[in-house]
Length: 323
Ligand SMILES: Nc1nc2c(c(=O)[nH]1)N[C@H]1C(S)=C(S)[C@@H](COP(=O)(O)O)O[C@H]1N2
Ligand SMILES: [Mo]
Image (cartoon, rainbow, N blue to C red; front, side, top):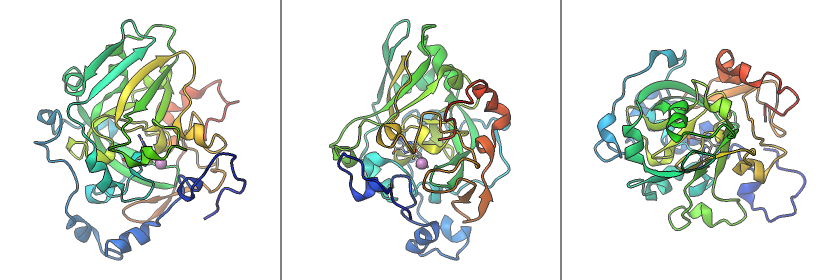
C-alpha cells in the first residue's frame, strides 16, 4: 500500500498516514473470522451485533415501510458483515471499532440546530423522529477506500429536516458536527485529529431527494457503530461525507471545512462525488470490491445515481467535484 510520500509538518502517526487506505483486505478479514471460502449461511451464523429494537431510541417506529423508489439491483450486504466492518474514527482507525462503539450513550440525545435559521433550537432525537415520516430505502454505500455495500437504511429526507429548521434565505450550506466526548470515544484523545468530525453539503444538495437522514438500518434503530442515533446517507458521494452520530446542525453562508479536508486537503475535498475516472491520489477508483462477496465491479459515475444528482453540479465543472 503506497504511503504519503511527503511528511506534513504536523505530527502524524502510522494510522493517520494511511487514512482511508485498506488496513485489512476483505479476504484477511473473513479469514480472521474463520469464514474464508464459506458462504452466506456461515456468515449468517455469526451473532448479530445490533441494538435490539426494544432498546433503541424511537423503537416504536420500526420496521418502517420500504419506499420502492429506492431499490437497487444488488444483493443487500448481510447485517452481520456490515455491522463488523465500519469506519468510525472516534473509536479508532481499525476495522474492529464496532466493539468500542458500544460505549456510546445515545439515549437521551439532543441535537442543536443553529446558524442562519429563523430561531435556533435544541431538539431531542425522539422528538425529531416524531415529527417526520420514517421510511426504508435500499442504498449503495461506496467508501473512498474502494469497497462497497448495499444497505437497507431507515430514515427521513434531509429536505424534511430543512423544512423543520426554517433556514434563512442567506443560508448556502449545512454544516454537520458529530458528538465530542473523548472519555467515551478514545480516538478523540488523539489531539492531532481536528475533532469533532465535521461534514457539509450545499442547500441544493440537501434538497435533493436522495439526501437522507438515517435513524435505522436492517429494520431497527441503527446500531451504534453505524452512527446512532442519527447520521447522513449521501449515496452519490464517498462514504466519508455520510457523517455519523450528529449532535449539531448549522446553516452557514460559508462552505464548511470537513474533518478529512482539514487533515488532507490534497486527497479529500468538499464535494467528494463518486467518479470512476478520477483516481484518488494514491489508488484507482475505477472498481470497487463488494464487501461481502469480494467481487470486483466497475464503479459508476455518482455511484449509479447520476440521473438524480448530476444536474446539481451544472456550472461547477471548474471545481474539484470528485475528490
Ligand atoms: N463521525 C464520523 N462519521 C463518519 C466516519 C467517522 O469516522 N466518524 N467515517 C465515514 C466513513 S469514511 C465512511 S466509509 C462511513 C462508514 O459508514 P459505515 O461504518 O456505516 O459503513 O461513515 C462515515 N462517517
Ligand atoms: Mo470511507
